[in-house]
Length: 180
Image (cartoon, rainbow, N blue to C red; front, side, top):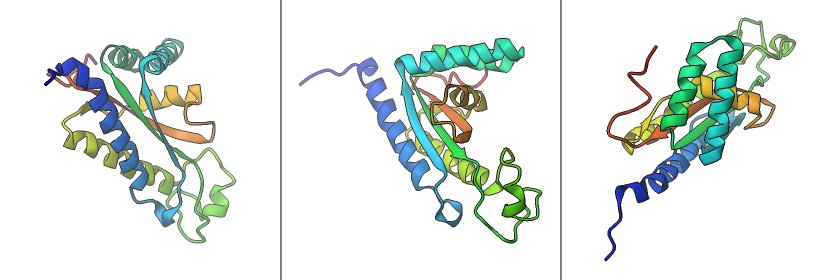
């Protein structure tokens, strides 16, 4: 019989849950069944690079939220899950939910998100964090991680909206009750 120390199993457990989160995001419902999404898992040096980019964005933009989140991710995240979407319309003749008459009109403005892309992303992220919650893994959805991941091209240039979910397994969730 072997004694397995808590610290030895933490990373393996977090990676196992992250894998389940990615699959939950993948299998979440998508509008018309169209897949415009990608997911990745970051660990180790990739998290350090991500936090460095977050810090650089915070300094360049004079945005303390990026600086706070960068420090928080660097000090506390053992694993980060990325979930992102492309901005692609569904070719609908009648919709207008994005503010344009239809998809053909919206396609003339490629930087404007399609509501179905963002809706699908929200459902996928919700599915992913529900897996973390079921496993009692501390996490938080962060747009700042997504912006840095986009700058770094971590999911590819075509993924224009990304959220990051840092994960930790400690006595208290380090991603809440942070300094403003």
